[in-house]
Amino acid sequence: MKATTKTFKYFSWSNIKRLLQGDLTENELIVVLLAPAVLFLLGMVVYPLVRVIHLSFHNVRLSMPWLGTPFVGVKNYIKMFTDPRFYHSLKVLGLYGSGSVFFPAILGLGMALIVNRTFPGRWLARAAVILPWAMPRALTALAWSWIFDTSYGVLNGGLMRLGIIQESISWLGNGQLAMFSLIFTSTWKTSSFVALILLAGLQSIPKQLYEAGTVDGATGFQAFRYITLPQLKSSFLIALIFRTIVAIQVFDTPYALTTGGPGTATEPLSLYIYRVTLNHLNFGYGSALALFMITMTLMITVFYITILGERG
Amino acid sequence: MRRTDFNSKLEATGFYIVVVFLLFYSFFPALWLLLTSLKRTRQIIHVPIEFLPDPIIFSQYQDVFSKAPFGRFILNSVIVSLGSTLLCIFIATLASYALARLQVPGKNVFLVSFLLISTFPLIALMVPLFKIFRELSLLNSYWTLILPYTVFSLPISIWILTTFFREIPEDLEEAARIDGCSRVGALVRVIFPLAAPGVATAAMISFVNSWNEFTLAFSLMSERSMYTLPVGITYLKDQYAVPWGLISSGIIIAIVPLIILIIFFQKKLISGLTAGAIKG
Image (cartoon, rainbow over all chains, first blue to last red; front, side, top):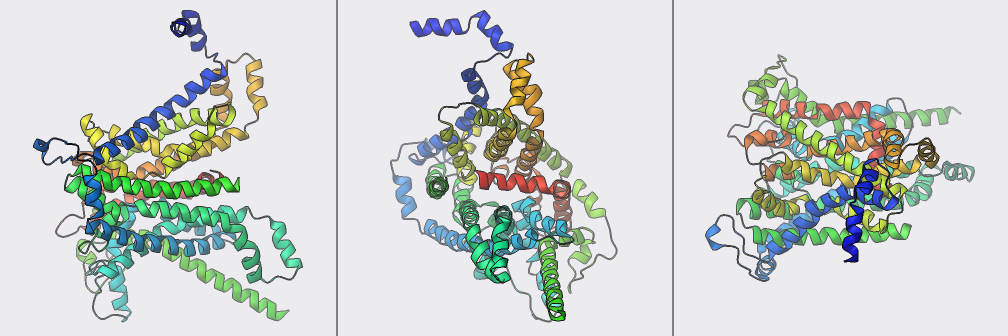
């Protein structure tokens, strides 16, 4: 009863007038300012999350609406853990994921070291570092699938012109080569991200460290080994964790490059989720797979937050 | 003396060779698309390969509009990207101000949940979002993409803007209030204009995110008239004889706004991108 009167008073005319004049107390201001963000989070992340958990315990097949959506317990999960194609997609993910974290890390470091130096034309080199980041992943993969094209691609065409190969190579038609091409494309696209993070890290290294190094007679390589690398450790870790998270979920690169082919040779979990959900219209099983991916991402993110916490 | 001269020259040459290699590596796909888009189809599929267009033609750029609803794809991409960017920046500005300046209870809960969202797999959220938008009969409407894009650009925008708000001196706000501004008045007239550079950075990054997004646009839009650029162009490939000339000219058109951003706002983009990861 007391609460009702309080609410009533809060919505009294004089109070509303005060609010409309923009004269808010701190707490009111906090609510007004944060409400839109919170509502969006609830609607677009929390609610879908609840729905995907719910769906994963039901049999939901949009292609067979007459079945209804019966509760099936953990059947979808049992199916998942006995599904060879699921394990295969994890294997593909493992291979593709480790490749597209490892190579961008190396290349990204190289790029960051280059554009961290001052030299004429640096802006062009910087543009070269940002361009792959700014390109849409799907269109990047499409561009590379044109370059890798067996009959008319510039890679085969160029190699033949140079006399290195006599017959065209099927870069995307052979399982192992397709995996190589996928990792290559992904590396091209994502090295930039690592480079930008490491560049910020490089620029935050105090200049005095290098001056002290020079006084002590350190060579360029020694300065790199004993000053740059240790100072870059935390930026490197952040870049690697972010790369891992993105590599786990990426859908557009494999879809636009190989569509998972040949067969299922380059079909990571993301593509399998798409197949199950939108091609087979099996939303129950798709949800179980989706939750597996969400859990995997969540675990890495929690690991990431713990590390950030330790750094303060 | 001469020897060190020689050494440093050698080092400089080596360095420039590496730089040239980097430029070639990064610009090659775009360059090759540009060359392809200027060739006649007969030349595109010529064996052995011909590297340079001869003659240079521009008809691929006309054809991409006449043989596919390419104008519509551009319009869709513009609406979805601008819509989600505006909405995201509006929401993020409000939230960041609160997080930077006010005593928000459980502030860390907010920051951590934003971090969690930024890492959420879109392909996994596609499953429930498809169901939800289907129930709401919102599939194939612009909201289907504007709403999730808004949320997924929120975390980085909030990080960028929070940093910006923290750097604006608090005295300014107090001065405005003494001069008779209400709390909200001070925000709108004094604080937001000062945060404009941060807003611009956040807006660019969220625009690029939305402009480039493929996973949801591809899964949630089934009508051709609702495709965004990445989806519309990708579907051109699903033909018996892949029209690489059209695809190339399409991609070139789609990345023009991105290249403009890179040329004119390089520093802003870099600072914004790294703010999210380093200061988060």
